[in-house]
Length: 268
Image (cartoon, rainbow, N blue to C red; front, top):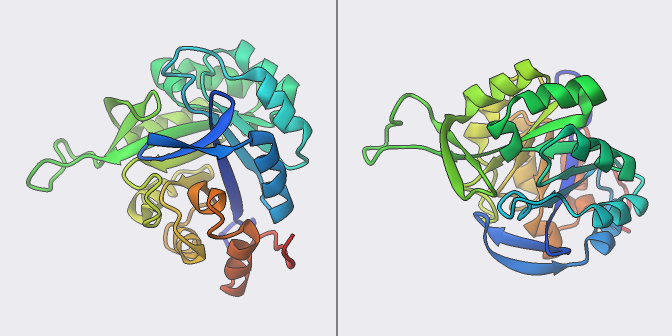
């Protein structure tokens, strides 16, 4: 159980492109997974605590999130629903909340204009503002980091390196009013080799919840990210999309290992 006594959350992620759920490895080689509305409903039945919807090509294509699809997914859910991708203004945020989103997540737009974090937090509350940080390990050929920083911030769906120190950026996001950090390891994304525990542990020292993302392999990897990484929530896509494990199976393992979850006792 976390120090504050809160249950750990399991969050399936729908990466959406052209109206379909897709999944790749390190943000590349996307494959079609299925209909976002159907998947969202299925994951809710499996016991998901929240659902993450990311329009992963919106920022690269310089367009807004697909609003109609967001509305359709929201109408099928009774669990909290977070939406990201292409959000660049408070107008976008208000529209998404009106369509049924409970929270929004911003990445590229926050890096480009950090004031957006404060605007969302002030107008809608910090609880609505999730800052997504896509980060990869930054090392020189000899294995050392070039300037003391360990992880670098990526934007535009992982396609652009910013040179920014990821942990310092996380601290700034907290100061500006972010309510949560969604931390994705570019190195682990889609690999099913386990979460980046070192990175998650470093970010978990921030005074706001951290959602660990990238590399979920099996129920044991969730045990690791909560017990060793001290994450508040864990996000996954591939292992759920491919039917390797259900959310209920992950929660059952966590429950049996003494990690507090909103437990689902029977398969759906």
